[in-house]
Length: 265
Image (cartoon, rainbow, N blue to C red; front, side):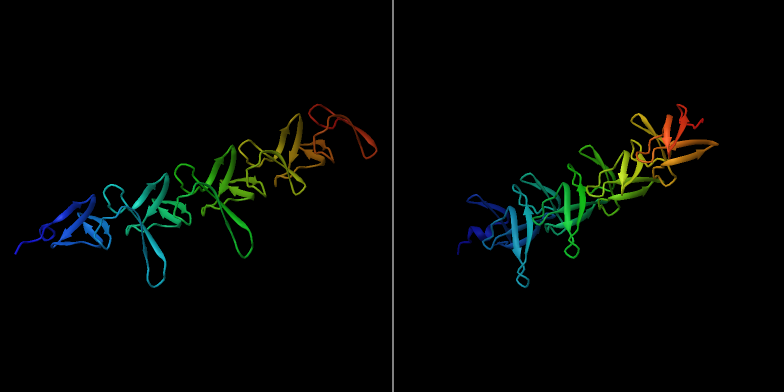
C-alpha cells in the first residue's frame, strides 16, 4: 500500500499558499507551541495571522489575540497594529483598562487601544469627573507637575488632576478651581487677593504687581488698611489694596506718605 503525502509530512508545510504544521503525520489545530512561540491553527489546520478572537462558551465573552502578520507567532507585550498601540499579557491576551507595566501606568480603551492626552472618568454616584493626562508620545500616566499646552498642572500619585489649593515642596500653589491650571501673579480667590510668583509659589510680604506695591499676610492674603512694619506706618488702599504715596484722604483726614509709602505726616 502507498503511504499518503500527508502522512509523510513533518513540521511546517506550505500548501496552496497556506501554512500548516504536521505532528505525528497530522495537521495541528488550535493552539500549539512550536520553537518557543505560540501559533493558532484553524479547525482545518491553517495557520492564522492577525487578530484572533476566541469565545468562552460559559460566559460568552471574547478573548482577543494578535498573531504576527508574517510569521503567525502570537504577540505579547506592546504591539503596534495599524498605527495604534495594544498590550498583550504573557498569555497573549489583549488587555483593556488601566495597565501597570515597567513602573508606569497606561490606559487602554474599551477596544484595547492605548490612549494619550487627557482622559476623564465619570463617577456614577456623584456625577463628578476625574481627569488624568497620558503622555502624548509614550501614553504613560503623568504624576506631579506637568506642562500641557503652555499651562502647568499637578497630578497626585494616583494621576488625578488637582484643583484648588496645593501644598507641595514646602510651598503653596493655587490651581484653577474649574480647569486646574496653575495660577501666577495677583489672583482673586473667594474675593481675597493672593500673589504667586512666576513659578506659581504663593508669596508673602511686599510684592509688586504692575506699577503698584501690595502687602500680603503670612497666610498669603492681601492686606488692606493701615499697616505698621518696623516702626513705620503704611496705608494699603481699602478698595484696591495698593500701597499709597503722596497725599491721601482717609476717614475725613489728609495724610502724607513718602515715595516708599511711609507715613510722614
